[in-house]
Amino acid sequence: MTTLLVGCAHGKVEKQNSITTENEYKLRVAEKVQKNWRYKISKDLDGEPSAALVLIRVGNSGELVESRFYRKSNDQGLNKSAMEAIKKSAPFRGFPDHFSQDEIEIGIRFAPGQINRN
Image (tube, rainbow, N blue to C red; front, side, top):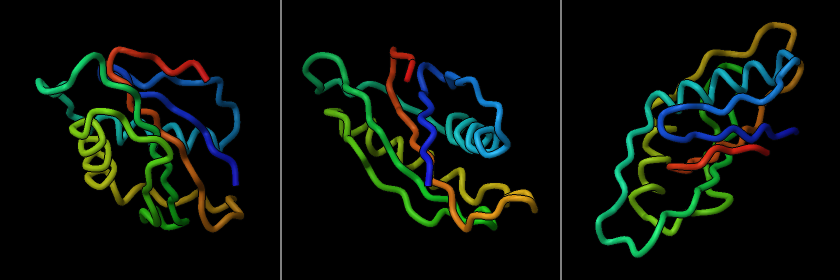
């Protein structure tokens, strides 16, 4: 199972050089999540919020199998908004017929003011 790391920053998805169909599928999933992400920095937060990294598993029919934090932000509002965006975005489009796997794992980085360059 491979993971594609996609960053969300100020309403934009930083796309990586994706040339495979699996990567294109992952980017479409991340773009859908990004469109549903709404976040405001918490007024109670000391300093800048750190990024959150969420791993999701999508089943071949597009269902959200699992979403979990790989790394949480120091801003609980960011953490909550990231999970809300993922849940609101599901279900996703089913896999193309030529995909052989049952599930795909996707890493999505939520970072206001930062662009993921991994």
